Length: 141
Ligand SMILES: [Zn+2]
Image (tube, rainbow, N blue to C red; front, side):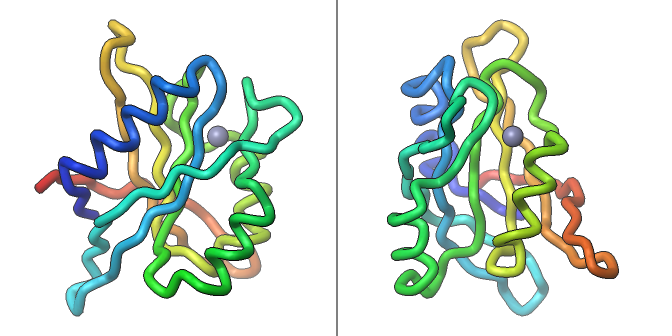
């Protein structure tokens, strides 16, 4: 998975802007003929979860608009400002509702010194009836 420096900076900025609440948004990009996912643009979306300290919910109205009208939507991002960048049981549960629409799943946390973002990338894959997240290498251009 490849992310541009510009997108990384946009994610990091959103994480710090919403801290201590979770930030979320969608990623635009494409998958090339070698199945490499390229993340080219980030669109922040308001987090409408009742408890945004520990959960995220992409604003449903805006989300539906993108599902219907944004052809190159390829993934989502959310932040874990208070925990590690690994999917929570709730993350995996809600993934089942919309995961087939996406290929990439990013989670951003804070580095140990809390000055930068630690970002992890996952690909969304179908495993029987369940959608799962598999950690993927993430390189920056
Ligand atoms: Zn989460």
